[in-house]
Amino acid sequence: MELDLKGLSKKDMLALKNVNKDREKVIRDGSSSPINTKFITNEIAKSLHPQVQYVKVADIVEEGIDTKTFVLVPDIDSGTKKLAYFRPGQYVSVEIKMEDGIYRRPYTISCSPKNAFDNIYTITIKRRAQGIVSNYFLDEVKIDDKFSISGPTGNFYYEPIRDAKNVIALVGGNGITPILSMAEAIMDGILDCKLTIIYGARGEKDILFHHRLDEMAKKNNLIHVVYVLSEEVSDNYHTGFITKEMFEPFLQNENSFFVCGPLAFYDYVNDLLGEYNLPNKYIRHDDLFGRIEIRGNDLYNLTVITNGNEINITCRARETILSAMEKNGIKAPSKCHVGECGFCKSKLRMGKVRTFDDGMPLAEKDFDFIHPCASFPESDVVIELPF
Image 1 (spheres, rainbow, N blue to C red):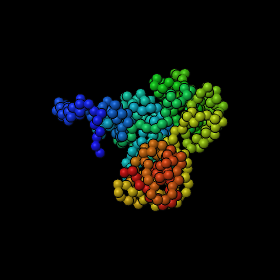
Image 2: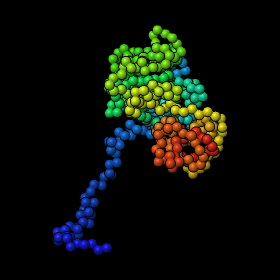
Image 3: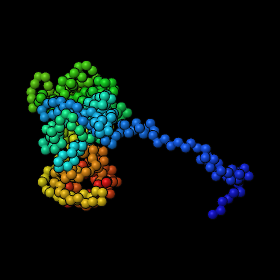
Image 4: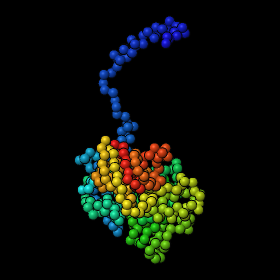
């Protein structure tokens, strides 16, 4: 195809003729120093969202029945000089190497974000029946032990653009940890909201951080705490289960509910809040707690394709595909363990699985993508990991 140059003047033609000469001059006169590839925005992003952080245990605090808080600081020898800042309510994924495999579990950071400036995180862990990692922490982990964690992640935090300024936290058992972090942030002036905590526990000894919560409520009129005991009767506490009559005195024109606790607690609280017909944005759930229970002992074959290799193991109906891989020493990507983060997304090549509402886009489900951390086998299964 020929160029139509009729509309060009002599001046235009001359400029076009000199393009190569001008380009060569710019190149010749340019600086020979290396191009700057470090930008402050990228450096800030790396510091806030590290792929991995190496930590060691600086202290261990007994919090109550079968519950300990682990104080974590940077493991400088392994390359981590400072810990990333986080938002109250976020978690880190902890990686623990055991004899039979590599396990990752999410644990909420239970301190104020202000502690991150002092290079301190705390995670509070309660013993769980058949909890491989939680029991390992309580029984085996000691001061100066080292391991790796992810950067802070998760969406269970207060966002003033989205959430109402009056927050009602409905808490069951060990679900207090993200709410404690929020309360600490209010004390430090990091969060600007009013927080009412309705805290349900079996008995007085099961109330975690009892003294600290009372102390914060006494010192700051933005924090209020109500305790409800399901298995003890006392003049100092409500008895039974959380009811709407317990939080209604604290409601304002607009309210956000932050719900955190075991599965049965979620179902119960959702029924309570259903009467108010609230927009979805005003009801927040901490997704680190499992949302379904799978029963059954059927054993299925699981074929895992990773890095061009096929690994054959077995997986029981009641355990997630990710758990089976971890127990067999297969390194698989994971963070949240409830399908929230999408980090473990894999291709289901064959078989049938059962999943809960794990946030997977419908388009990706149509192309047989699954989250192994939130998928239970219902037949022999073949999956392909992202690496």
